[in-house]
Length: 218
Image (cartoon, rainbow, N blue to C red):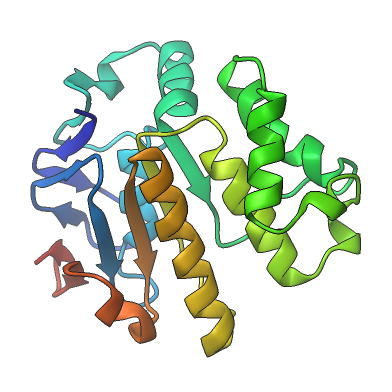
């Protein structure tokens, strides 16, 4: 079973107080909301869990492997295999078509993109007729769906979304959460959403809050 276990994580930032996070385990099939105001350390914690930011203390285990003990090349490969990311800034490359942007997730993981899988996601997310358009020809909602398709292309063990609803109205926020939950269910992935958006709290049974002067996970 794929899981992340942050064992007493601490991250020291020169410009602020150290961030300390209590133990956290996430298993396949879990849906977890990480809630906290801007600046509370949500993105920092996501970066640590994903192998992008080495903590000053503690461990991050993915399927029993301590990822910061691995060479960076292997850590990058593991990240591409096990993690799918939906960033607050969607990071769709303007020079690539929607299909090429989605396929990029496989390229970054060093695996061959499955054309059938891409076609399935395009159809499931209502983007089949937009496959050869570039991001600037897509609406914000279509770009968001494309980012979700890219995140789940490799059937990740965990989908991480950083503030996916903060810039959306109520209807579109519900739509994005629906899409993320459906895609996580389709692949059996864990879903971890970091947000300060209180509108979506009731959608999750597992809510972790970042709060207090040490900004610990409650």
